Image (cartoon, rainbow, N blue to C red; front, side):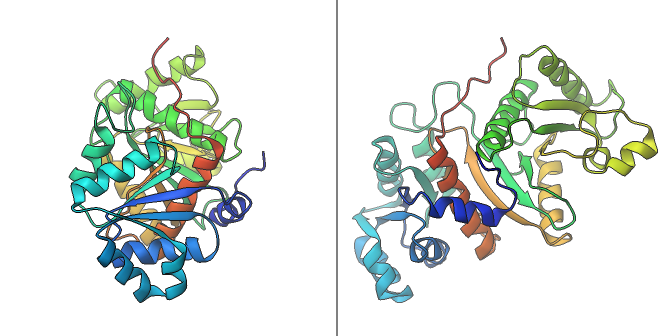
Length: 314
């Protein structure tokens, strides 16, 4: 498998496999239409818009008649029904990925999490995963969790790590380097993130977590800079060249995510992982490129097979 080294590589990869269909819940949203229009116009995927047929068609035509003619519209009376219909399209295999449109996140997630008709298996865990391209770093970074789980437990961190490892493999990185972030490299019993990282590292060494080189606790600088490793005299298999960053909580992950975008002019593609199909859950603050690349990432992962791996402790 060819390794994806830049976000633009995702676009080229998806162009080679144009069989993916995106289901958009409550598609009567101009911002959502703008986000998906480039994907449709570039023949990257097919789109089904679920919502008020009259409103969806009017908004689609306001973008362009050509775009309106390319999308399928499924009528729905309200946002709850739109979310359920979109999820059902994915469950039935008529769509390979899912996106939130003009409806509340709570309604959208309730349909996804429905125990009987949703997309998450029993005991499953949804997590936010961002694939980031930062000009000051030589390769893509996979970052989690910056958007869903406030304070993941140790067990949840193992699941999050497994999700990111699977995505790294799908991007063509067969043995990614995963850094478990804390405040310092030395184990500190006063920091739960330090203890969690040390235990998860031991699990990886005992083959309870497979498919990656895992080390922690690590501070952010030695995770991303070989020079800082040398200055500190730190010997780590990560050696300042992390592919994956697992943060201790949503505050640290979200702060890194936004700092990398705003201060370092990074670009991101984000999905919700842990369901039977990739989910695009865009933020209102996301720019057009972020939304576009997020949809493309979801389409690429769907084309690779989004099977959920067992992240339980052996």
